[in-house]
Image (cartoon, rainbow, N blue to C red):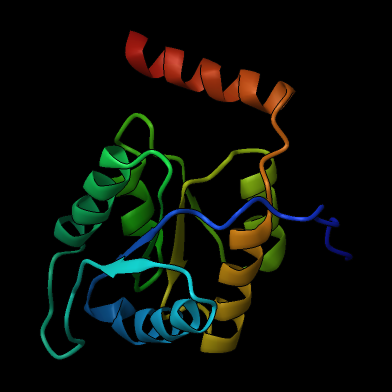
Length: 161
């Protein structure tokens, strides 16, 4: 299967807020190093270590709060599988969290869903794939058009519930 081509990407987001639980800490460190190499401004919202079990919703909420305060920002969350962080983050209107464990999903979540929050599983993917997912997610633009209409509908339906 070939990956969809991505047109030249948008400017990098103003800032990336990143957070994890204990199971995502190792991959988060790898991704922080990549962001520093790429000179992408980022803020690390925890957790600080893999040594002690922590509750993923607390760290996910920190990143969600940062994104809601700065609509031009994007975020990255990492837990063991990515599932818990995805469930938590998508409870908030304005957050479009996409769980990505491959490059195709990372591209398409930006092109069609304008995902502002990338979620990965630290126990599911390795560091090299994690870095490539972040690279394509950062550079892939949103297609807009009919996809924006669908996002508008999602927001409308969320406010009706």
